[in-house]
Length: 373
Image (tube, rainbow, N blue to C red; front, side, top):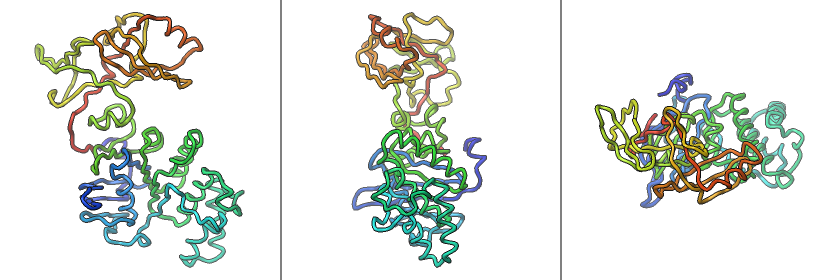
């Protein structure tokens, strides 16, 4: 457990050996994890990895074959959804189309038997919190996607659950609104002090708002860690490839005079300091943004350089995504910021360029590993 995790209080959700099949296909396979009180936890993975099924198991919308689910130190493994202290915000928002914003939110509160005054006070409070009070008497078809999302959040919050479960809630929004809502979700979670569990396939979304991330693949938890550790020091090759781009440097580990080195064709021998992993079970990687483009070979200490030619160029305004073929006929991904208006023109004039990075930015990644928690 990292130091950052130690600052978080006791588990709000404890999952032990959870398994769920659909026919002959395993959706969740022997999953165990702790989600702490008042944290924003993200479950991240590709389509079909089991992340939504895991969320639905926590909510009680699916029933596991084996395993236990504890919420706030109470066993809810076999409890129906309405008994569990959680509320779920669906991707489709699940608002009643024939009800106004006010009616959508008060519906569940009336079922709970609360007084009219308490219901009124709760609705006013929560709509101010999500900045939707001015739309209290509108119907869902009069709202934008972001506004519908806020109403769905408001409805979930009014029940004062221990946990808010979010099933890819921002996937239907456009890019700018999605970023805006990510910030709002993060701020809302901090102000409420409620545990949020987010399921997403969007790496940027998970990295930007989660306090910890669980990466899933084929029904298993591959790795659990903080966003910076997941990105900068992934413990597993699947995580390294799924969270952003990565260049795996082709080569072999060798021991020379009691020093472990990694022999590469492009960069020559690379000293590997403080490598605790078994070299034979590891690979070396470098993120595209850690590679700089230069006109000349770098002579700085710990810098490694290789000559190359740009073969693919994708322009995204503030950044360029490049593929550079090295002199040894290998392709490297490079991300280059457009720091000046002439950045692109100047670079396109060069017949070849030098790719340079610092050896300290290399990642030593296990090919196969067990879960890190």
